[in-house]
Image (tube, rainbow, N blue to C red; front, top):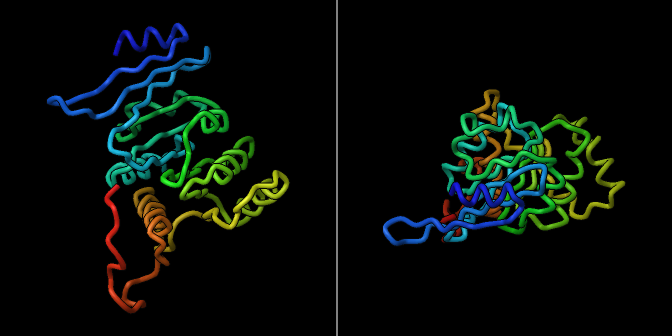
Length: 217
């Protein structure tokens, strides 16, 4: 690992295989663009990915909950003082960099969840535009209804497709107030969207509780 980090600092992308008792766990990849060094893991087994933008207090709870649900979690923030191993021990990847540039260099697809927890007009709309254009399976953003309308105006100006898929204000209405409750609300909505479920109370529905067999993440 030390050799890989030294090579990355010199500008050369390198990779290091991970294994346990002979079984492959994935690959640690390091790369540098001269401004930042990225250390991340390519996981074996095709785990779904959750990208959280903004190293705010809510992010700690969201990251912990997403990791518990089996996601490989990435946290992105341009401020290194907030994006530390100590604050986000459950994150597999912590990337210090300008969020639109980071996401532009990141693989995003139907199994990707993108959650924007910042309130930064400098890049929020651009991040959402990237996530929607590249077909992320879930795209959500924290903010009030007025914040949502402001972002939507920017997305319309950008010509962003599929804006109806944007979940904002984010989360299911469970009366959440604390960071842990907000994380539960957000990740419950993620599961509902990915499973094609309405997200209402089971007591108000009809038919079988389990619609179909679903793959484990």
